[in-house]
Amino acid sequence: MDIKPSYRVILVIVALVLLTGSCSSGFILGRVTNQSGQPTETSNGTPAGTEELFRPFWEAWQIVNELYLEQPVDQTLLMQGAIRGMLDSLGDQHTSYMDPMEYSDATAPLSGYEGIGAYVNTEGELLTIIEPIAGSPAEEAGLQAGDEIIAIDGEDMTGLLPELVRLKVLGPAGSTVVLTIHRPDAEETFDVEITRAHISIPSVEYEMLDGRIAYLSLNTFSETSSEDIHNALEELLAQNPRGLIFDLRFNSGGYLDSAVAITSEFISEGVIAYEESGNGSREVFEATGDGIATEIPMVVLVNEWSASASEIVAGALQDHDRAVLVGTTTFGKGTVQNWIPLTEDQGAVRITIARWLTPLERNIHEVGLTPDYEVTYSQEDIDAGTDVQLDRAIELLSQP
Image (cartoon, rainbow, N blue to C red; front, top):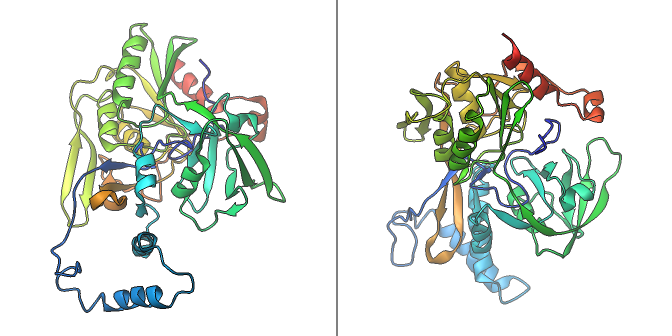
């Protein structure tokens, strides 16, 4: 099994697939809920007490339907556009609307998908490649970490929510897609034609390294990740390793419950994270007390694409002095999103509902976690394929 060198970025959040809800991020640290959140309505559907406030909205709606050149106006698209605009006005890149098709795609199983085979970052202004999956069409086409997708099949993607751009990259195996790429160190943009394929996504990768060092890598925090981690730990610990390297580089996050369960494998008791809501309430997440790897010496690898649930795990292990962090400062996503389905299968809203803090009550949002040992890559390291961060972790665990 090959170990991912840290300069290969499996960035924050998903893989041109759906590691969302993974998944959060994206994809995102989040939960899927079926809360309706519906306010009391008047007879015309307007929330009680807001008739005057919404008068300009309904006036604009009527003007569009009466005067817009291209008639008839698609009422469903008009409604969906209104929801998107409302959520965009909050200025929070993690709060957004998904139409029914997008929501269905975003909550699909994470075992595989059909697309180009690349982990991507959906948290910035543009959809950005984190790392092509080994042997994927994206790798064969020469896509690199940091490549930004600015157009798909000639259609401009700038200004569009990156998560929606990600969904547009997906498509049936055997079909082709042309991506217009902006590469930071290139003078001009260029087109890449890629034939999509079925992509299988391993949640966990693990092996024993020389010197009796156990290596464990997690690609995303999905619904099955905690079970996968537990099973991998059982196999590794049976070989009596002297130390454990837990690789969270390029892991963009996922389910909060998964992060808590995985952290509980490594600490026997105590707070894992605090969650603070907008109403001032606080929820405390604590270790379950049934972990199987609570004593083994441990190093956690992180980088600038370790985000969300990855930061919950790494932050808890760092605060409890359970492990040292090696690598570079993490992404800095310290908020929690809720996916709330709308009635009559009209999609869902993903809305920021809380912030989370580490056990020592550190707010890492837009700041990130600072590693105990900062290790960066030089161009020579990248050219040589040398994983200097992994090497440093092995060195630390090999000390008497």
